[in-house]
Amino acid sequence: MKSLGEETTVASMAAMVTSAAQRLLLILLAASASARYTPDWESLDSRPLPSWFDEAKFGIFLHWGVYSVPAWGSEWFWWNWQGAHLPNYEIFMHSYYPPGFSYADFAPQFRAKFFDPKLWAKLFKAAGARYVVLTSKHHEGFTNWPSPTSWNWNSMDVGPHRDLVGELGHFLREENIHYGLYHSLLEWFNPLYVLDKDNNFTTQNFVMAKALPELVDLVNKYKPDLIWSDGEWEAPDTYWNSTEFLAWLYNDSPVKDKIVVNDRWGIDTGCKHGGYLNCKDKYKPKTVPERKWEMCTTLDKMSWGYREVMNNSDILTYVEIISDLVDVVSLGGNYLLNIGPTKDGVIIPIFQERLLSVGRWLSINGEGIYASKPWRVQMEHTTSRLWFTTKQSAVYVFFADWPMSGVLQLTSPVPTNMTTVMMLGIPELLKWSEDSLDRSLLIYLPKLSPDLADMKIWTLKLKGVE
Image (cartoon, rainbow, N blue to C red; front, side):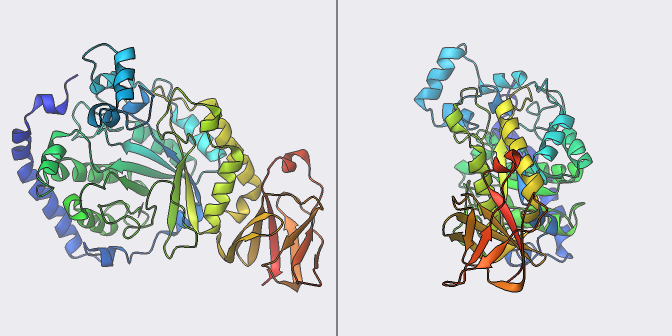
């Protein structure tokens, strides 16, 4: 298989894109000129976030691409091998592949032959996910849809010979799950990107020929609910024409009223600009931020893409996942949990087990998670680790350590003569009293069935407290 660089010279490609680039930029600028949001951060950041995103709370991230074929190291396999020239990657290739084997040679092996988007969607529904984010394109440049600007380097032309983005989107919507698309702005070895980088990003050959047309194509073709941008860190937002694109997205695109975007649109935009903040991978603040935020993390602690060599200790435990979820939601965030499918489109059993365990927990405790807000106190450390959320005048208390005495002490909620206490999963009201010394709330916990006892983190619902 020939790469893009082998088929066309960099000089001729740069010449070919000039007129198309000018037309695309004029379209974006003209569309935003008379619209409500102007192509500047002050205007764009003033747009209210569509409510569905804050209410969703829990999403599933999917890293799936050509890097799923070697399935070794991480999803940065190509860069680590031929960009950074890390010795262990070079040894891996020398040990298992013939001389002259290129990264492009992996693509025909990315077959997705067992990919069943309907089963994936049902799994994610059972996991309690309210949104799913699929990698439409990672930094390697391979697109999981038939991108018209990714010749012979997309899932329709090579490998699966399928529109992976379109197929999954159809079945997610059947399950009423919001659909998000991850899209990397940069491509490590694209000749046009390398040319612009060599020119200190004073030219925009790659942006106008590749990055922007692909984003517009994704929006028009698949109408996603979320665009999860990445790969922004080497160039300013002015190089990426981010504000022009977002003004079009908010004003004139077919998803202008529902679309949500993150904050990765240029070297200095993280934690500052965009629809919501995720700042950096595995970001978690210590206090409630002023703006909506999201923590993205991954089940395999060592990689976002699938690895054939994983130890049990590399995978987040059920308790770690639920603790993270509750912690994040108590601080007003969303929790986006990543898995890496295999090259054949299989979600391995241990990943399925973790997702389904989250779903079982949410089926009982989700009332205190979905559509909740941070309470006046987010966490408390007394005889147990405690987290709080609130919704519709109720306060939800999540606790992870069952007291030996069977009495849980809460110092933050102030009881009144209208106070009632119940545990999610148990229909009867619980008894409570007020400590005569420090006025803390004492809750007398019930005996649990084996299923409830196995949850490890439990939820109380308080009404009539201050």
